[in-house]
Length: 341
Image (cartoon, rainbow, N blue to C red; front, side, top):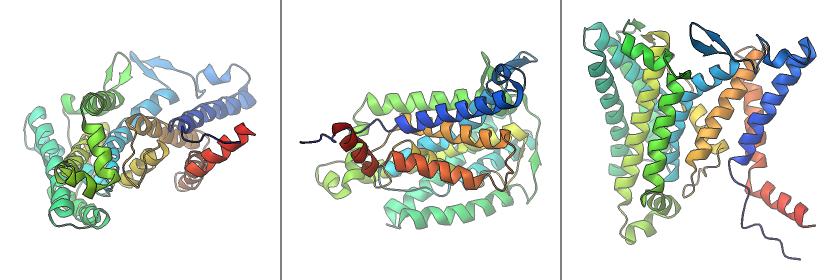
């Protein structure tokens, strides 16, 4: 009997099931502790209330804090699609926040500060592109250099201090609401929609997958592989800069020491969980979005269950590993064989 495994389960199926399972688990804990109505009552994980005209609750926190991870995951998806990796996104976040905060401190208008921060982030992405495309360095090494140097650059910009600021426009990026939706998540969704339209309404998706699948063959076919790879790194830097602005706006200050710390790992996790292949040639923007929300739902769940912050990465990594294993080609083939017998 032949078994058709050519049509694998959608890459976002398992992270979506993971989100549903996490929500169900939280509801079960609340019910066990306080009764059947507890999940939707004040203090319950599924409860959404209102405070000062804005929605509050664990689900709102998930949307709020997943915004920056989603932005990073979008940029990382483009880079991974062309067989690259970007380990510098956390440091770029710190630099962008430092530039914006110090410009506000110096009296610059918010839009000028934001523009300069994003320009610096894009320039750092271009620097990665020069090392990878121009000099032929391995992406891991090239971006690792900026991962280390960028943190020092952020400290240099702020004179090794936490630069605080007060500006309503910039603060809205991290703490604002629009029709009840947290601004960070809303900005990330706008970025996702814009990028999705660009990828799916043009030949960009086909070109990115061609370069990621076989860069030399794509070059011989007339595809400007170097331009696409460079563009992916610039986009990753720019999106990391947006995430850095969100982090700085959220705490009303730029922390060059801790801003964006381990953010590159979160972005890579979201990308992989969402079904993008680290080998290049296959990517999913929808998967990146679902992966980011799944990762934040998991993090919020652990904190809601009073798991210490220094212990949380262990169960977090185990759950992510389980989802990746379930979505792997080997497991998909086994599921297909089991359905066929």
